[in-house]
Image (tube, rainbow, N blue to C red):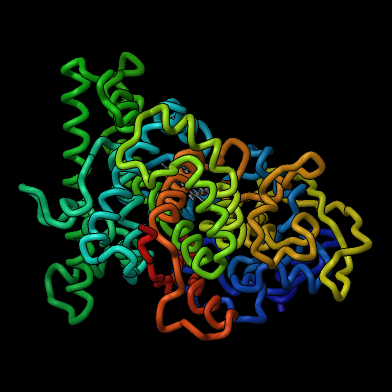
Length: 537
Ligand code: HEM
């Protein structure tokens, strides 16, 4: 009875906000992330694939709920105004740092800290994300794309086609680019497949296995590790050994990067280093901030930031690119417009190398390609939701509405939602991106042009939150856009992207649901994106 009343009271805390019921798990903690592909179920609040459906059902851009464990009042928000307020009041709406525990394996880092600690990390990294480094990202993307093309073309005759697993190839592309542009590790497409001398695993294998084992590492209680070290537990011991080995292998790779960079700093050669991010991290580690010889960043913090940047900086971009490739196979008219745009800047075919000035010259001319990438991220935003913990009394503006049969909203009226300390707020980005209040009654249609301003139209910036917003917005936004736009334009310039043979002749909706299938998790992950590439020359 007591539990019933505590749940009831908590669910009513948000004033006139409609109540969508009990949430079985804290929607942002590790356990919810691991079980996300199966849980919550279709009719339960928090169901990922519902997108805007719950908000439409309750006629409100904010809905309240309560977590079963802890009776935490939980507000779900798909309202651009409310989300902007949350992002700008970072002292009141603080990051749920406990949810980022999985990233703290090597130590504290920028993504999993708050307040003064977070500021210290961000201050070190910020200067590395500038226009010079974007130009370098562009150049490295051109280099790696050419290596990828060479690999594919070796299997092809002109005019013939090759079928690729887009996730596999694009993860490799983005990993090579972040490793080089962020950390000065300039490996080639082929070279990255074998372990270098002194290493047990190739860099790529070390990163991908560590990623795959992240949750095993975090969720396994220490006593199971201890037991497994003494007795061989069937199934469990091999998995734990693999996890251990993957993180060790990656640590050795990252230590290599650190010592290389230290040598450059000590040797006075920093000006020649392209990898500004690593240079800043290592310089901060070599700088004493006070007489007690405290460092701006400790050894563990440098290692942990390298790890976090490697993860945050490649999987998000790779998955978005993958969805973009799938969508281009499905929408040849959109692909044709990108081809036109790319042919205008590269009439003789893709560039085989690039200079810093080509970034400045070409990036602004790839407007439609950029719009296509934005539209892709509107549908498949890699980070589906964010969570903030409320620190003080505040109020948010939500909107009530009625949905017409044609999908248009009417009677849109603002209302105030009071929020109390201790409650949590879920920024429901997938739902915000499908909210017809900002994107119109055709929000469910794929239309890149909605991201292009005209004299009479300005696309709704506040309703696009793929890179988050405010002080904690993605530091690598421009990095990701540069890399992705360059990669998409080059890919479409060199190849026609087609649906794979096994889907040819199938109805469009069937092709679409097969190619764009995804599962929720740390990021929205494409699970079936196989496409056929036909060489244009
Ligand atoms: C399409 C690609 C990307 C998307 C959609 C994306 C999205 C996001 C989002 C939503 C956040 C906020 C996360 C939170 O508050 O918990 C974030 C933060 C962050 N991102 Fe990205 N990201 C992308 C690419 C990158 C790249 C390329 C890098 C690095 C080179 C990067 C590094 C980071 C870091 C370090 C943070 C934490 C910032 C902070 O807390 O101050 N991201 N990103």
